[in-house]
Every structure is written in structure tokens, then in C-alpha cells.
Length: 498
Ligand code: NAD
Image (cartoon, rainbow, N blue to C red):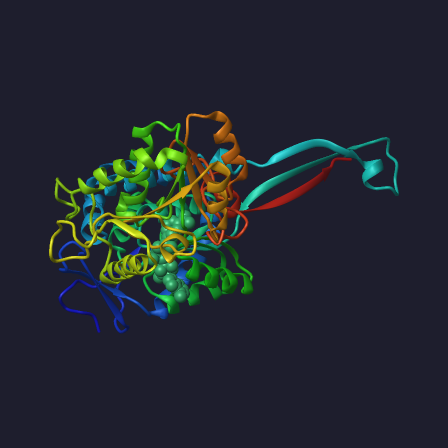
């Protein structure tokens, strides 16, 4: 039964809001106040089946709709989203806990993906090579004097595609997936995070206002039972997942075992290297924003910083001064620079890591348990540890909270060696004024996304986005050229005109 204190969230199937009658519900609360927000259906597998059926029924007509017509809905959708940025951001602030500025930024980044997907007529274009052979060489049994053989490759949709998304960017991450998928002619079933799906629902409602036909885009809530139904379903062709490495490893192996095309963008532990010659202000700002932005709940959070040589002398005091000045509070409050963690379980996990860092012998320079913050809600302030080492859990494991671990290294090579010890490889950045050092970093560090003099090499819709090692499973990353290839299959045609 649902908790009557909070409205039950609907699924959206074949263009209509539908409610689960009988299943387990999860109660979500505002992480800044503890007030109930919504009840989310968790295990209504029947709804997942209906969503796939709706997507499968819509596929024949949608895949035959010319791509130029398909993207007209995306153009309208972009305009609608622009008009609803503040409304969507407000929902995110209430349910996720981001600051208003962070929430608005996340909606805008999502809109970038829609703009990119509007380019589907060009992005999907195939290639042709005329007269790749002559018939005498192509077919050795006849010699007609060399009639030309032309060959071309087209990109075609796959069928029903599924997206499974995390809580930390509830509006933006789904937009990495479905706009490109449907622009390419697929139909889609989205399973958003159960922790904060309200902005995702609103975004899908707006997509229907923009004119997407029934069944092209469906949303179903749930946890592992629902996910399992989707990733094993005979009618599902591809699965795009973003979330933790643990869930991603399971979804990748299970999806592949059921013959799906799968991409899993997973967890991370990201390192920033600061060289002594770096621009001090840019480096301090960059490390600070990367570690504490979105309360550290980003797959691109730079949660370990390695000070090279005497960079520690100016970097560490600069970071501590900045972190002490942070206003920790509710995301909607104008004085807030850092909101709460998204739920109590996240807060408990982060507090556990702070304990672990102290027990392991790291120096706690700033204790986020003791900063000024509201009593109710899931708050932890910025936390900084110094003299940390790679065998401490605060350095090797993803904390996903506002905890920065500082390491020291004598030179760049030693710093890169520390980065490369990590089992993750999502991103790494460095700050330096030396082109030589930057080049050495670029060519020796093991990470899928790297930044030079930027704290966060943020995803750009036109470029592929994702990491290496345990941060990614699959072949094609999300966004950019990879996104188009992931949601399409190639067909080669060989032609001879006699
Ligand atoms: P999560 O893995 O707990 O959940 C992600 C999705 O997977 C949710 O929809 C959830 O319902 C589903 N899920 C979780 N466990 C499952 C299971 N056992 N079986 C089937 N489905 C399951 O992740 P989260 O806590 O929502 O998000 C935070 C994680 O996402 C972090 O690890 C972060 O680094 C990662 N992330 C990665 C990227 C990237 O691009 N690499 C981007 C954003 C977030």
C-alpha cells in the first residue's frame, strides 16, 4: 500500500498517466526538511510489461516516420522546456536537494542534448562509395568489361530501447538517452531513479505536450524487479544504464546474457593533480567546485586532489578557507551554496566514510559534521582530509558526498601513478601552466575524460561521454557520435546495375 501522506506517482504508458493499484511503494521525502514528497511504485512488473508493449506497438509507425518529421517534436520540446526551466528546477530542488543554480544548470545541460538530437538527419546519415569494385573482380565467374559495384552503409533504428537512470541528475541523464534514441526511430521505456523521479515525470509529460505519439516514449517506475523484467524482455533491443558500478555490472552482464546491446556508465573516483606552477586561483576554485558541487554527488566529482611538490603550501589553506565559507542549507535558500545529501541513507554512508578516514589515520582538516547547518534534513558540510594514502577507503572508494581527500606527490609521474592505481577511470584533471606537463598527463593518465585547467570536464552533448575501467561497461559511450551509433544499427548495401 502507498503512504497516504504523499501522492502516488503515475507511470506514463502510451501517452497516459496510469497508477499502480497494488504493489510496494517507496516514500520519498524532501532531503532539506524531511517532509514527505511522493510515493513511488517499486515492483509493479505488470506495468513494465505494459510499457514495453506500448513501445513495441508504436515502433512500426514511428520507425517509418521520416526523421525530419520525428525531430519536429524535439524542436517543440526544446521550446517547451525552455519555458519550464524554473518549474523543473524547483521540483529538483525539493526532491533532490540541489541548489536552485545547480538545478537550473542541470536542466539547461539536458536541453543541450535535445538540441544535439535535433541534428539526427545529419547525424544518422550513411556513407556511400561508388565503384568500390568492378563486377569482374566482384564476381569472378563473369567478365562484362567492368560494370561498377557501388556500396553504401545506412544507419537504422533498433526497436524498443530501455533507459535506467540514477538519482543525481534526474532530469538531465534521461536526456542523454531518449531524445537521440527516438530521433533515430526507436521507441523508448525509461525507468528513472526511484529516489527522485518527479522532475523526470514532468519532463515526459511535457514531451507528450510537444506531440510525441502515444507509446513512443514511456516511463515506468520501480526497483530491481522492474529493471529485470525490462532488461530480459524479448522485445527490448538495447539498454542504456547510468548509475553505480555494482548495479551496472549486474545490468551489463544480465542484459548481454539476454542478447541486448548494453552500455553502462558507472561509478567513479576522480583525481585532480595540482602542479606548483598552476594558476593558484583557478586551481583552488576548480578543485573546490569539483569536490563540493552538487554536494559531491556527481560522477565527475574530483574527490581526491594530489598536490605536487610545494603546491600543497598554497592549495590546502586556500581550499580550507573556501570550504569554511560555504553556506550549507536548503537548496531553495538564496544563501545556500551547498544543499543536503539526497536521502538519509546517503548521509549515513558519508558519515561512515568520515569515521573510516579518521580511523585510518588521515588528518581531518575540516569536519563536515560540525559546520553550521539546519537540524532537520540530510546535511553534511564540506569535509577535508589531508595526508591520505591510496590504501584508505576515502581514497579508493566512491563516497558520493562532500568529502575531499588530499594526497601529496613529489612529481607529476608519481601523481599519475597514484591516479592509475584506482580501479575507476571516469575522469581526471590537472592544473598547470606547462604545456609539456599537460601533454605528459594527457598521454599517461588512465581515464576516459580528462581536463586541463578545468575542475570538471563536463559532458558536452556533441561529444561522447564516459569513463574507463570500472566506470564503464560496453563499447559505445553515451552522447555525441557514440550515442547515435549506440541507438542505431548499420546496414550495408552492395549495388550493381547491369
Ligand atoms: P544506483 O546504481 O543505485 O541506481 C541507478 C539505477 O539502477 C536506478 O534506476 C535503480 O533503480 C537501478 N538499480 C539499482 N540497483 C539495482 C539492481 N540491483 N538491479 C537492477 N536495477 C538496479 O545509482 P544511484 O545511487 O542512483 O546513482 C549514483 C551512482 O551513479 C554513482 O555511482 C555515480 O557515480 C553514478 N553515475 C555515473 C554517471 C556516469 O556517467 N558514469 C553519471 C551519473 C551517475
